Length: 97
Image (cartoon, rainbow, N blue to C red; front, top):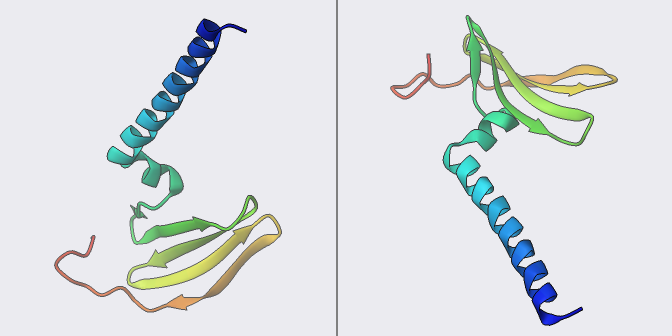
């Protein structure tokens, strides 16, 4: 293997690494990663799904609510479990309707 072949391999590796980092930066800048992970609160009428946290491939924690009441639920393939009620959100000037 000569020096020019090693140079091309190294250049291709750095180019692909740069593309990956650039795409990751753009996704973070546009906050697409938060939308994909479910961090954005989704409301539909009085019901809403708040934050979501994946624990592993089969389980996740989700905050669901109705009005000012919020509940923490564990969703899994074996079944869904309500872990408990959370304190109500405070109504303030920056509260989302």
